[in-house]
Image (cartoon, rainbow, N blue to C red):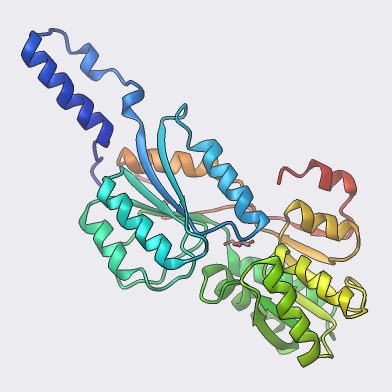
Length: 323
Ligand code: AHR
């Protein structure tokens, strides 16, 4: 078990108090042991971007849970989907000597150097949402996120059961990201033989639309799209309609995420099936960060529970959706 790191603020408070006591000969240890607002856990959080409805909901959840009132001093930095921005933010967190570093890596590789620097500085890492592929030993204390491979498998099982003859175009997320790699692995393990083509839409609506416009030319036989997130799926809807076809009928759409707009597309019969990826895990993250900062044991991984939605989803379900 990792020894608890005294928080930066508690160290400063302890030094100030010792100095004060030296000058004024204060008695009674009670004040020294009393937790105050100065005991906040400093957390550097590098969010990978704001590319999707999922990401926006995740950011809101993290910010709503890692609050001052809950005992955190959060430094939140948005990397705008650029790895170099994330690496810079992580180095800044090391320079600030935060108590815990949390980050959601935009892609899996390329973190060796900075992870080693964080390790050398003795700052514990909590991985959020996506995973890393690194040569650094024991690079993080714990990871919280969804089972992307299972999400891909669940999508594939729906296709195998409901569209066994479909010609599938796979609209991939950011290439090299854990979400893309594992969703593709899970889906292709079930119905890979039905996939006629693939391209990335980088998890955004605009790039999803562009990728599907091209796919409808290159693979005109496409009658089902498996999209790695709702935003790209909504871009696909625009591209399909612009090509004079009906999304949900001529070209069925199977998606991942389950943000409100994605569920609305199910109700509107433009999407056919959505596998949920739940972004609202800020409270679980806050618990983990507290335990990590205190040097307590935590599980190596926490899987966020997901469900799935089909076209029986109602407008009331959409209206009740929190994100
Ligand atoms: O890593 C989670 C994925 O990232 C979500 O499915 C997607 O919408 C986001 O961009």
